[in-house]
Image (cartoon, rainbow, N blue to C red; front, side, top):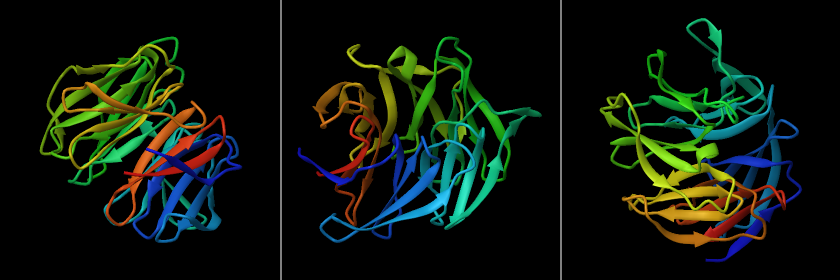
Length: 267
């Protein structure tokens, strides 16, 4: 699989999200800028625009079913909503009266519930957490005592929510039932090869394979049993996140921080 550079000149790019309108959102962590890249039908860049200035250091992003972009802001310590250009709203910033540590990544289930990781300051001490924000607005914590919980994804059947525990170089999962977390403790889904910093952003393809941005190594493709079945490399190894896009979902977008660029591959 060959990766083509869509755009460069980014500042530690993160959180690519396909907007279903021919565009890709990308966060610049180092300068707080949320950019949007409009592509043509061949996947080439047509227009690049500043979509919004974030209040802190944004990280992962995801799209609600209604088309609204949500952002995990690590520095602002909040989940943000960006309903229109240059319009940023705080969705949640506290749990049981205490500030969040610093969210990193997030995803929606098919019921409209939002799941997100909250890892700040948990690299050396296992104090990272994972939350579920119900569509009614109730925030509950279901994962704790983690060493930097990072990327998060839900499988196509909605049976498990998966979390990349970067510091321990592994992926955990919790059982779901109709959008509710039903397992008290996570189970180990995959131990990744130790020749990298650890897993970052993740996405499922339609076949149920989990694609992982393995920071310091490449894009790892795992089957339903957690076995690595493919590894794809890019010009740099600072791979932070990935996303599927295009009208048929056959474009793979990857953000990479050594070259500070956004890449695209045809699947």
